[in-house]
Length: 164
Image (cartoon, rainbow, N blue to C red; front, side, top):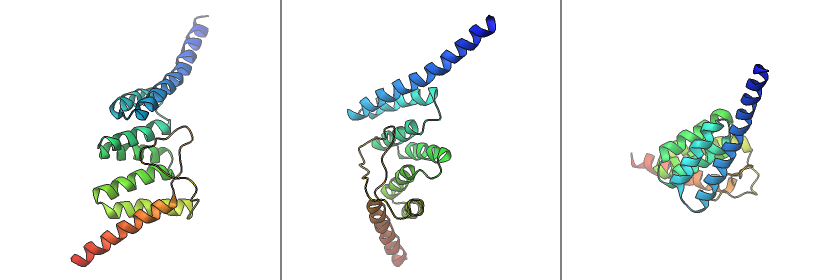
């Protein structure tokens, strides 16, 4: 009887952790819609604490960090996503775009080239919007955007090389 109670208590705790994590994630999404990114990050911290294997929690928190200017923390979260899903093009896009914003054009080009190799040049149908956040299924990355920003980075690198 004692083992059964312990087993059921443990099972209930494990089930409730996932429910708590989803609750925190939903709260974070509400805060994100209101552009209250600091509060969203706190909710996502709790979600991650309860369920650290959910990519969407790290992905949302990364975009929230970027939104408040904490780009290094955003990159760290994007890298956590890539540790769990090495071909996650949205995480690569996030890192590449932050590198572009920071003037780290070589790093950005590397990320964009990797996206290109993963996606094989397509599809073009979904548009990433910088102020949108990742839901359960997440958006894809528009290859036109990847190619355009990669082109800008290559032009900047070329100009810098010419000035040397």
